[in-house]
Length: 153
Image (cartoon, rainbow, N blue to C red; front, top):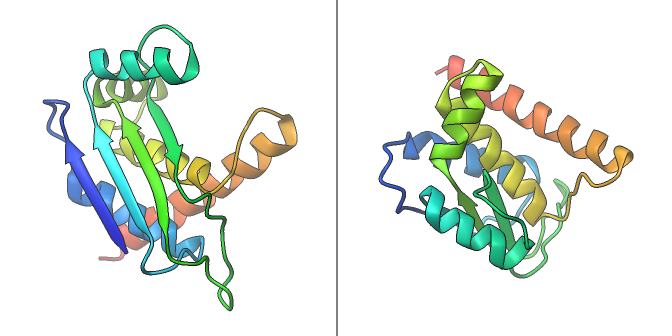
């Protein structure tokens, strides 16, 4: 799996943990080993520009996802085809504020947002209550399994 991470935010983050979580989530969703994902970390100003341009909403946001080949989750017997999954853009400054509110670490928030962004790239959404239940349930399962794996190291 090709996971490229580019930190343009000026904030130190645990880039290795983000990449490990991304690989873990893609594997859990049975995404082809040759799929490509880009993760970019930007500051609040850059995120606000993207948020206004693509979502027509003011202010910076925590995560934006830009799907490319519209890949969908696979199965163990039938993984997704190889291709460009897309780009996830994260804002560590927004994540840090959200982490304080949620009562967990900035790293945990960045991992949550990375998983959330990947699920969006794979076609999940949370606009409707049933979609939200499915997406957030899956997100919770992936993060719980990843945390268990990290503790077992």
